[in-house]
Image 1 (cartoon, one colour):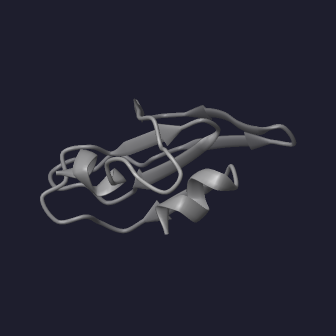
Image 2 (image 1 turned 90 degrees about the vertical axis):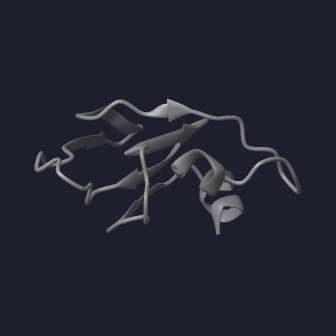
Length: 78
């Protein structure tokens, strides 16, 4: 799934990841956002325009995604 997300410059928002310590992962122009986060009741606010994401209210960890190999994004969400 992450290969599809990071190959197509999209924003993927999910409800939770068990034991996650990262709210947002970014690779290129694509994002995976954990919108539900234990003990943090602040909303994730996204501003999106024609050119893509303009701003996001949480900090995103930059990762390098390599096609066909390398670490999984799930490795960064533990």
